[in-house]
Image (spheres, helix red, strand yellow):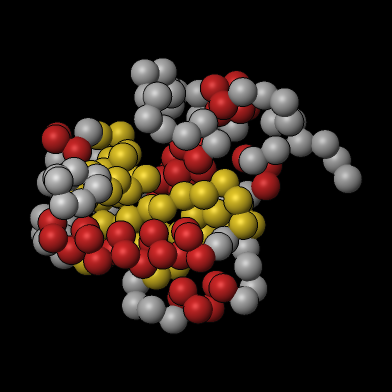
Length: 160
Protein backbone atom coordinates (compact mmCIF):
# COMPACT_ATOMS: atom_id res chain seq x y z
CA UNK A 1 0.00 0.00 0.00
CA UNK A 2 1.34 3.43 -0.95
CA UNK A 3 1.95 5.86 1.92
CA UNK A 4 -0.24 8.97 1.92
CA UNK A 5 1.54 12.24 1.11
CA UNK A 6 -0.39 13.78 4.02
CA UNK A 7 0.90 11.41 6.71
CA UNK A 8 2.64 13.33 9.50
CA UNK A 9 1.58 16.77 8.27
CA UNK A 10 -0.21 19.27 10.47
CA UNK A 11 -3.58 20.59 9.25
CA UNK A 12 -2.24 23.73 7.59
CA UNK A 13 0.40 21.82 5.60
CA UNK A 14 -2.11 19.12 4.67
CA UNK A 15 -4.45 21.80 3.34
CA UNK A 16 -1.58 23.15 1.22
CA UNK A 17 -0.83 19.69 -0.21
CA UNK A 18 -4.52 19.28 -1.10
CA UNK A 19 -4.59 22.66 -2.82
CA UNK A 20 -6.69 24.22 -0.07
CA UNK A 21 -3.94 26.48 1.28
CA UNK A 22 -6.06 29.61 0.95
CA UNK A 23 -8.25 28.30 3.79
CA UNK A 24 -6.78 29.55 7.06
CA UNK A 25 -7.24 27.90 10.44
CA UNK A 26 -5.60 30.62 12.57
CA UNK A 27 -7.66 32.11 15.33
CA UNK A 28 -10.22 29.30 15.28
CA UNK A 29 -9.50 27.54 18.55
CA UNK A 30 -13.14 26.39 18.68
CA UNK A 31 -12.74 24.18 15.62
CA UNK A 32 -11.30 20.67 15.63
CA UNK A 33 -8.01 20.27 13.77
CA UNK A 34 -9.19 16.87 12.49
CA UNK A 35 -12.76 17.74 11.65
CA UNK A 36 -12.37 21.22 10.19
CA UNK A 37 -10.51 20.00 7.08
CA UNK A 38 -13.22 17.36 6.60
CA UNK A 39 -16.02 19.93 6.84
CA UNK A 40 -14.21 22.29 4.49
CA UNK A 41 -13.52 19.45 2.03
CA UNK A 42 -17.25 18.72 1.87
CA UNK A 43 -18.03 22.43 1.45
CA UNK A 44 -15.61 22.63 -1.49
CA UNK A 45 -17.52 19.76 -3.16
CA UNK A 46 -20.89 21.49 -2.67
CA UNK A 47 -19.99 25.18 -3.04
CA UNK A 48 -22.06 27.93 -1.50
CA UNK A 49 -21.49 29.86 1.71
CA UNK A 50 -20.12 27.96 4.70
CA UNK A 51 -20.96 29.02 8.24
CA UNK A 52 -18.79 27.17 10.77
CA UNK A 53 -19.89 26.60 14.36
CA UNK A 54 -23.50 27.62 13.64
CA UNK A 55 -25.27 28.21 16.95
CA UNK A 56 -28.77 26.71 16.89
CA UNK A 57 -29.50 26.94 20.62
CA UNK A 58 -28.17 29.56 23.02
CA UNK A 59 -27.22 28.51 26.55
CA UNK A 60 -29.82 29.30 29.21
CA UNK A 61 -30.27 28.08 32.79
CA UNK A 62 -32.60 25.39 31.37
CA UNK A 63 -30.47 24.07 28.48
CA UNK A 64 -27.01 23.78 27.01
CA UNK A 65 -25.68 25.62 23.98
CA UNK A 66 -25.94 23.63 20.74
CA UNK A 67 -23.62 24.29 17.82
CA UNK A 68 -23.54 22.66 14.38
CA UNK A 69 -20.15 21.96 12.80
CA UNK A 70 -21.26 23.71 9.63
CA UNK A 71 -24.14 25.02 7.59
CA UNK A 72 -23.86 25.59 3.86
CA UNK A 73 -26.16 28.05 2.12
CA UNK A 74 -26.56 26.43 -1.28
CA UNK A 75 -26.06 28.75 -4.25
CA UNK A 76 -24.58 31.37 -1.93
CA UNK A 77 -21.29 33.17 -2.55
CA UNK A 78 -18.35 30.75 -2.24
CA UNK A 79 -16.89 31.91 1.05
CA UNK A 80 -16.72 31.21 4.75
CA UNK A 81 -19.04 33.58 6.62
CA UNK A 82 -19.84 34.30 10.22
CA UNK A 83 -23.36 33.49 11.35
CA UNK A 84 -23.96 37.18 12.06
CA UNK A 85 -23.20 38.05 8.41
CA UNK A 86 -25.86 35.89 6.73
CA UNK A 87 -29.36 34.54 7.15
CA UNK A 88 -30.57 31.04 6.29
CA UNK A 89 -34.23 32.03 6.31
CA UNK A 90 -35.92 31.04 3.04
CA UNK A 91 -32.73 29.43 1.70
CA UNK A 92 -31.78 25.89 0.74
CA UNK A 93 -29.20 24.72 3.28
CA UNK A 94 -27.03 21.75 4.16
CA UNK A 95 -26.34 21.02 7.82
CA UNK A 96 -23.01 19.27 8.47
CA UNK A 97 -22.06 17.28 11.56
CA UNK A 98 -18.53 15.91 11.35
CA UNK A 99 -16.62 13.18 13.20
CA UNK A 100 -13.11 12.00 12.29
CA UNK A 101 -14.10 8.42 13.07
CA UNK A 102 -16.45 5.66 11.89
CA UNK A 103 -20.13 6.50 11.55
CA UNK A 104 -21.69 5.88 14.94
CA UNK A 105 -24.90 6.51 16.82
CA UNK A 106 -23.59 9.72 18.40
CA UNK A 107 -22.95 11.33 14.99
CA UNK A 108 -26.24 9.95 13.68
CA UNK A 109 -28.13 11.59 16.54
CA UNK A 110 -26.32 14.87 15.98
CA UNK A 111 -27.22 14.87 12.29
CA UNK A 112 -30.85 13.86 12.87
CA UNK A 113 -31.59 16.35 15.64
CA UNK A 114 -29.55 19.16 14.08
CA UNK A 115 -31.97 19.09 11.18
CA UNK A 116 -34.84 19.52 13.61
CA UNK A 117 -33.14 22.34 15.54
CA UNK A 118 -32.25 24.36 12.45
CA UNK A 119 -35.91 24.36 11.34
CA UNK A 120 -36.39 27.22 13.84
CA UNK A 121 -34.38 29.42 11.43
CA UNK A 122 -37.01 28.79 8.71
CA UNK A 123 -34.85 27.69 5.76
CA UNK A 124 -36.59 26.72 2.53
CA UNK A 125 -35.09 23.21 2.57
CA UNK A 126 -32.66 21.25 4.76
CA UNK A 127 -30.33 18.40 3.93
CA UNK A 128 -28.45 17.03 6.93
CA UNK A 129 -25.09 15.34 6.39
CA UNK A 130 -23.28 13.02 8.80
CA UNK A 131 -19.69 13.45 7.59
CA UNK A 132 -17.36 10.74 8.84
CA UNK A 133 -14.00 9.06 8.26
CA UNK A 134 -15.38 5.55 7.78
CA UNK A 135 -18.75 4.10 6.90
CA UNK A 136 -20.81 1.58 8.84
CA UNK A 137 -22.86 -0.79 6.68
CA UNK A 138 -25.40 -1.48 9.44
CA UNK A 139 -25.94 2.10 10.65
CA UNK A 140 -25.96 4.01 7.34
CA UNK A 141 -29.31 2.66 6.09
CA UNK A 142 -30.88 3.33 9.48
CA UNK A 143 -30.06 7.04 9.19
CA UNK A 144 -30.68 7.46 5.48
CA UNK A 145 -34.21 6.11 5.75
CA UNK A 146 -35.17 9.51 7.19
CA UNK A 147 -35.99 12.35 4.83
CA UNK A 148 -33.15 14.75 4.19
CA UNK A 149 -30.48 12.60 5.87
CA UNK A 150 -27.25 11.57 4.14
CA UNK A 151 -23.99 9.91 5.18
CA UNK A 152 -20.83 11.13 3.45
CA UNK A 153 -17.46 9.45 3.94
CA UNK A 154 -14.40 11.68 3.64
CA UNK A 155 -11.59 10.42 1.40
CA UNK A 156 -8.92 8.59 3.40
CA UNK A 157 -6.06 10.72 2.05
CA UNK A 158 -7.53 13.71 3.87
CA UNK A 159 -7.33 11.85 7.18
CA UNK A 160 -3.89 10.17 7.16
